[in-house]
Image 1 (cartoon, rainbow, N blue to C red):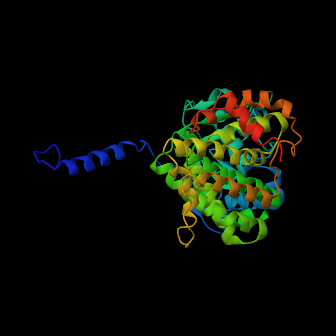
Image 2: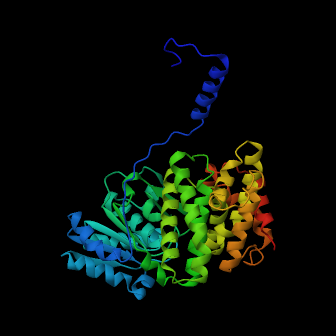
Length: 417
């Protein structure tokens, strides 16, 4: 070994040096999976059994009213009650949960005094549940937990049961809560907010309306794509990003055209979960940074907003990453899809455009808008949108540094069809 008295020829020394240099380019990571994942059709029926394993006596189920109408709420409550637990419910929140909705949930929790929380539904249900957990467990208000690592004590154990295939919140230690007055999104993250158990039951996703399937699917795809290229990307995150993208890209068109295809629904749910795990170990980028102001200012649904911005961001990032020698970052995603076919591999330089075109095809299939004009957002607002985008935390992780000019360019590139 080098350094142990052995001498190597010069050509071998150069190879060893290159290999050492290559190893040093791998980003360090600190990874621990804090969540137990239970996957399978009908697995919602195990929630009572799993809650009992946590030695719980009283459960607060946080689910939106659409989940009640679909019957999922009743199924979870029956399983919990059959296990001998006292169960109460909180439903007074909506999409993009706000600080006021969290406050209402905390008041409910104060009445119920639960020792376990269950977040049942889409990302809004799970995020609202986490937000309630922060404030009920540690006191104060949700604004106190804006950022990372702000929890002052252990939180209640939480079981997440996603009914959509989008945010991957079940795999993350973050809650995304909007300020009730300013509508600014506040990411609140702490390792202690990670769910103790996530139940992935693909049968629950069969009841999603077509539009929800479309919007949440685009959101999940954006997570897989953005986490692949952030400044915090590492060996763990890219493993999840690439696997998530493969599952989602293989199944998204299928669930749009064949909504009862349970295999496709299963792939979408697992893909969204893996993308959530990628976020937990990486972060998001410019597509989310430029999408969030569209949601805050015009109430554009998140999946629509991020879908609108994603192709432009891929093209921007790709042009710079290729110049910097990181062209493989996007091509890895694209070429993973063709590894079992005879299709010619997409080059590093062509991959960003190829990927952006794929996203646009999915947006077409989903029936989503692809311009500010279609969303009736005036181009005169681009300057203020650009300023807002610069305040977004996710933008700081984009592989290409954002400035007002670049944000303005992204919005201008999607201004019209």
